[in-house]
Length: 165
Image (cartoon, rainbow, N blue to C red; front, top):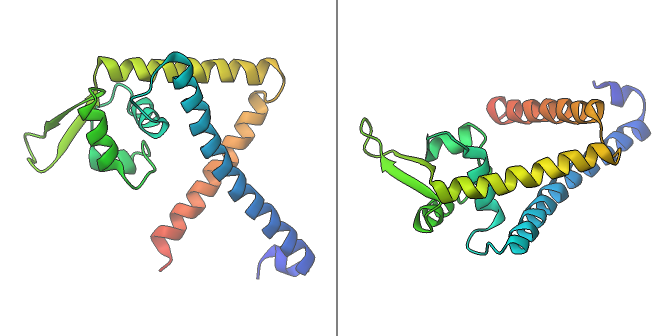
């Protein structure tokens, strides 16, 4: 029996409401981040790449990875990774090359254009970090608390996928 159950139904319902609010907030924040990136690209006149693809470039950075590694390393959370990789290669933001050891596997890395997109996002995120701190929205303690809590949820969900059928 959980601690929340022993405290009564009201506490359990309050926790559930809080959990559902947190889930909705994470989802809204992700969509809002994509909108912020889209707006930045429109501001600087970049129209041939979308925000999901740009985040993929940002997360890969200087690494060279296989398509399979993108999800396992946490670089990419979407379901259509093959589509986005193909678009990024076709538009010249990424190089791809068959792996010499396993010819079925393709390794990808950023081109010069891809690194330029990554730099635009890095600059955007640096401005955001400065603004959050300067305006007192979040300080170091706040960001550490958020990150710790989100990592704990991530571990919990990962355990649910791995160990519960």
